[in-house]
Image (cartoon, rainbow, N blue to C red):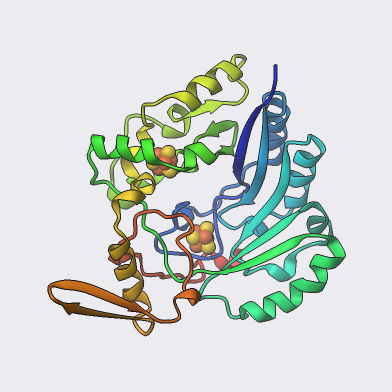
Length: 309
Ligand code: SF4
Ligand code: SF4
């Protein structure tokens, strides 16, 4: 049977992080330590490689450079020709720990540069430039000045279904983790978020009910049914990702103004709220395009458990 093409797969090799960002979309700020075991990843790739082919595979976290044998995950996927491009998405705190083996296996390294980084983007870039030539990979450093808040416990079923219907995540890609294929990364931590943040205990484990078990003997038919299902997952009831279209341009700009007041001037004229933008190009892009809120101001800190790493 012909393999199914999926443009993008996210692979959280570790769930924990050495940063502790308030509005972490991956809920890494709630997780002490958790790995996607290499043995399980190998089993998953063995099964997946019979059925799907990815455009990009993004090895991420939490913080993927906390995974000491990250190169082995990528090499294995590469040997199995799972994808066209192999990318690592890191917060960059450990950029000096990139091993030659790891750099040899990746095509792209993307660094999210957060305010907590003591090294400037230029310092990191100067370090990476010669290495990227030597080991033949491309790197990007993206300045992150805010987070989109996507956690919620307050949307209706109708809104959640609408969000699922709109959600780019399920068109573009998937997440594979610990024996399961998911439409996005949310099912693996939604129970945890609800319990830890709100004391809500669901009667279902969404890590099981919102995904497809990769080792299932009828995996391919389950996968087809799962991908084409027009009904939302339970995880969507706690996620604002797909409701991005409901957030107006003005709201987004207001959000930016709150964070970078020196860039944006807001004024009223004839009952209309205007915003004038200066140096707008230096603002970070709305890459995920999700719902933004006034609470979305970036707050990061070195993880309290960071010393362990
Ligand atoms: S750097 Fe921040 S947003 Fe990224 S995974 Fe770590 S805690 Fe989450
Ligand atoms: S709305 Fe959220 S939980 Fe639902 S598919 Fe999109 S990202 Fe995943």
